[in-house]
Length: 290
Image (cartoon, rainbow, N blue to C red; front, side, top):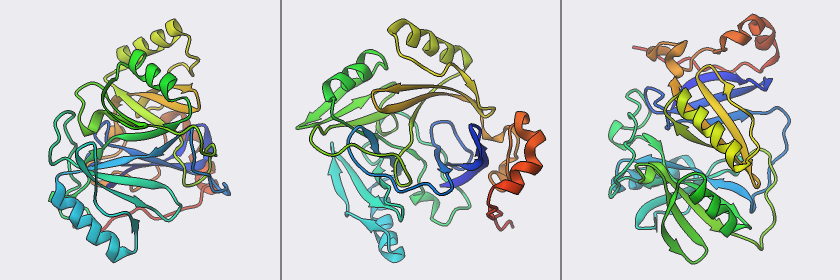
């Protein structure tokens, strides 16, 4: 994945907020990270977002990554099958778990654009986000909210796991919901997922969601201008759900060629640039060009 934006957490300017996405930072392809200084390790468990997924073009790409993980010492569980799709679960050094999912048999939300100048072949590159896995103790209640409020449809159910779909569906429009009412509760910290974001087209669409939340009685943040997009946050049970607009996008303040290479700040933080740069720990994101 390509680093398409290096900025700061607008609610905590001492913390980096980095965005990794497809080649052009397409809406719906970005995975973001907060770099909270001195944070303690989180605890995996129920009532949390447990496993993000990344889409790759086909089953051959999974085999490629399985070999690549072995080469780089990345912990993984080998290629498996999940609801008829091939997946490759893996874990990074902070303990966060992910999985790659093959688009070989996929229909639905279109993928993004593979990173043209990345370290892996274009025909093997990650080009979008796949199903997000959520684990809760209140399975029926949460599933009901996903269906009645967020408009999702349950398309498969195996034991204590349900596969839900929204919009165009497919790997890019799915939630994997797991029932776990026996395990320990998760605790936020590094190696855990902070929130999940569902995309909508524009300001009118997010306004409609703000109205819907009011009608159904879901407390929310109100619409927040993040410069690169607008956002609306609501905590449903323990799960923080963001609704975000497709635009304006990550090329609003940087050209394609140097996306993510400098510290980008929205206009309302630009007057604090010198102070912010003196407080955050610098790290080099310049790429070799040419």
